[in-house]
Length: 175
View 1 (cartoon, rainbow, N blue to C red):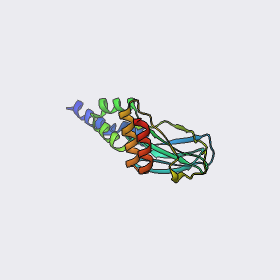
View 2 (view 1 turned 30 degrees about the vertical axis):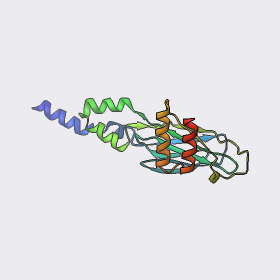
View 3 (view 1 turned 90 degrees about the vertical axis):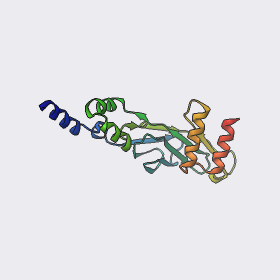
View 4 (view 1 turned 120 degrees about the vertical axis):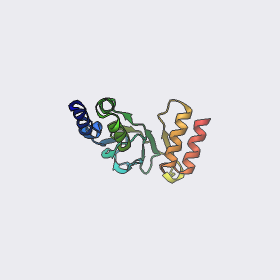
């Protein structure tokens, strides 16, 4: 009986290992070849703004982090950055917390992490078109065309890409 009580107490106190050990947010630094570019970082947990080079404390998520940087005279740069799983915290939750902590950490984003630095390249516009004229460079990290189409669709759904930018990038990807 004492053993069972100790196990229950340990499970309750050690739940949500990742959220206890490192929280569910982290600083992400955006750097680019152009200083002073305005960047928006977005996932389903929120939206953060900064100017390059700069950092923002973002809430972690299992969803990709969408980053869009713009500056007059340059093509917009868009990238979808996948999060990775914090493996050690997961095993701590499964072994010690009986899985409850794992479920909580997945829900809050504490079980995931983004790269600490994201580098973007803004390309100088060859014409005097503005960003609204659809001069956007989209970088996708998926290995297959299907993964890249999914990332592209999420960027559009999240409002990072306009319909015109989405259609142009999709056409380029499928050709």
